[in-house]
Length: 267
Image (tube, rainbow, N blue to C red):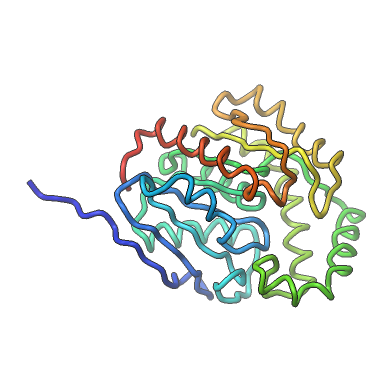
C-alpha cells in the first residue's frame, strides 16, 4: 500500500500575473485553511487564530499585492484578489480549502466560494461580507478625504503592516471599490451552497462609527433568513480592527466547526 506524504512546511514567493505573492504554508495532513487578509493588512494578524488551532490544520497565509512582502502590481482590483486565491491554491496543490476572511478578505472568500461551489469546504467571515456599502459620489468623496487626512501617517503605518505600498489615492480606490462590491454582494450570499459562519464585532471602525457599523451588520439579517447555509457563529465585543486580536478563539471555534462538518480530510 502506497503512503501519501503530507506537504512539508514552505515559505516563498508565488507568481501571480504581473506580481508575486509572499506565501506561508504550514504543511501537514490536516484540513487546509486559507486566510484572507483585511484591506491593507499583511498576514500577521492571523497568528493568534493559528496558534489557537494548532498543528491539526494546514494553515496557509499570504500577503495580497503590495501588502506585506508581496510585490507591487499594475492591478489592485477586487477581481485580481479573487484570482490570486486560485494562484495560491494551484501553487500549493490545494484542491478544497476552508476559507477564513477578515473584512476585505471575507468578501473575497464569499466571491471565490460562489464561483467554485464544488471546491470549497466552507467560509468563516470575520466582520465582513455583508450586503452594505456606502456608494455614490458623496461617499467616494468622503473616502478620498479620509485617506487624504491619513497621508502623513502612511510612512509610519507601512512598516507595521497596516498600510500597503501604494499611493494614498490607490488606498482610497480600493476602499471605494470594496464598498461597491459589498453593496452588491446580496445575490452572491444568496447563492452560497457551502456552510458559512459569521463572527461579527459590535464596535466601530476607522471609516465608520459604531452606529454605521451596526447598520452594516444588521443588513445581513434578511440574507440569513433566506439562506440556511449562513449562520452567525458569534457576536463579540471587539471593534472591527481588534477582532482578530481579542476574539481569535471565536474565529478558531468557527473553523473547528466547519472543518468537522467537511470531514477534516486532508488536501
